[in-house]
Amino acid sequence: MATRWKDLNFLGLDINEKLVRRCLDSVHKSGLTNGYFIATNATSTFRSIVSSYRGKLVLVSIQCPNPDFNKQEHRRRMLQRSLIEAISDLLTAGGKVFLESDIEAVAVRMKQQFMMYGKGKLAVLNDEDDPNIGQDGWLEENPFSILSDWEQHVINREAPMYRIMISKTDQC
Image 1 (cartoon, rainbow, N blue to C red):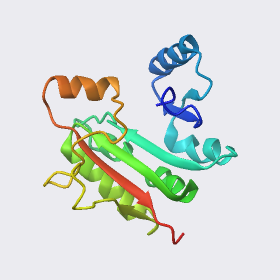
Image 2: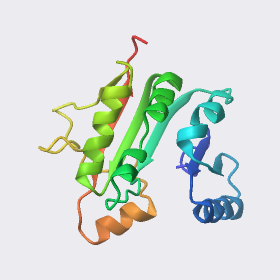
Image 3: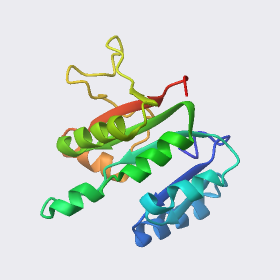
Image 4: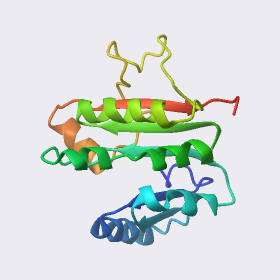
């Protein structure tokens, strides 16, 4: 996305340091100056990192969080209320939140949590006339036309992806 939209800045936060190093190497090799990555727990650092940015937060993307279905407490940890509240507070009016998972239960839970903890500032974009929204209410395609490695892997094995776009209302 940083290659396509050079006038915007992109920041990736991930707890996996090895993945972050790989992403930073890729950005360095490509010569991009608008792509950044930080190895961190987004739940505890998102607000402080993003609030120090002078520009507007126009998009947050949470793609394929990796749950551990064997441990009940891990399911709850995937997306915490404090992170959703920070996103809701810092996202500019009209800004978007893109949620995606290859596990339907995870996508449903993320959507529910954003609606529950979004302080009434968020709404699901679900235009029934939009040909990109399937009968089940999920976005059929990635709206950015840029697939993550995992998303490509899931599509290659012909498995479904569950996607939804949420917007911050202008009344905030």
